[in-house]
Image (cartoon, rainbow, N blue to C red; front, side, top):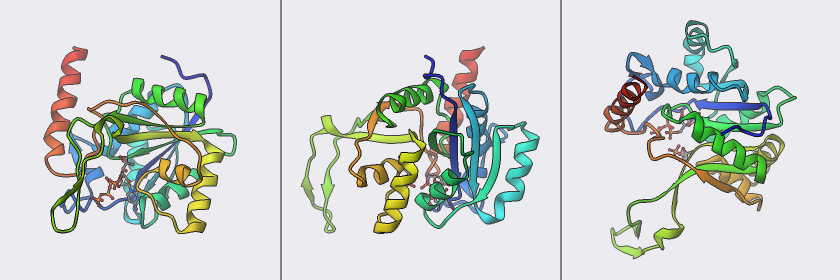
Length: 237
Ligand SMILES: Nc1ccn([C@@H]2O[C@H](COP(=O)(O)OP(=O)(O)OP(=O)(O)O)[C@@H](O)[C@H]2O)c(=O)n1
Ligand SMILES: C[C@](O)(CO)[C@H](O)COP(=O)(O)O
């Protein structure tokens, strides 16, 4: 599937500390098949013709090694490596402003989602070009409960309306920038980019994600990601 032909900018956010992973090294720099997770992620966008530019947002202490990755792995679409903020939303706001002024369409992607496929990214881009704002998502497989602070279930939302949200999240660039500025003014902090757009009252669509587009978050995610990468290599022959 081809995206509609627009050239896109991508903000890859990788300025988190990976607290839930619990490793001394931030999780985005852990190796998957001898390559940092973040490099796998960046290589995915490097390979897509529709992507004109990537802005990489990282921790202050990591800019030098990331600039080194850019040259060592030939990541020529990475135009800048910037220092992120204290929350993901702040890192996104820093990155989006840095995209070239000619970029009209922008995606945000977690540096720790290295397994996203080009087909899934394209579905998200196409949906955003139709609707202005779209995110990858998959229907939840488990029954989800709301549980109170004493550990007692308070409700069981209808699973048919529940989706697990992934990245990329794709927008007309001006819409996302406006939404992030509004969120900042209102003191609104969301855990994803769509939340800021929703906060403005603008609808966000979902595009079909993939269950394998995992966010590497806790230690058990690492062997699963290794397994998925190895399976893909075997399939390619
Ligand atoms: N201030 C922050 C916080 C997070 N992120 C990035 O947002 C993505 C998704 O966040 P998450 O998985 O929660 O990463 P961490 O914040 O690093 O993890 P944790 O919450 O376990 O500390 C990651 O690529 C992370 O590096 C970021 O750029 N800036
Ligand atoms: C953006 C995201 O990856 C969508 O699933 C997620 O919301 C990031 O949230 P986290 O709290 O930083 O893991």
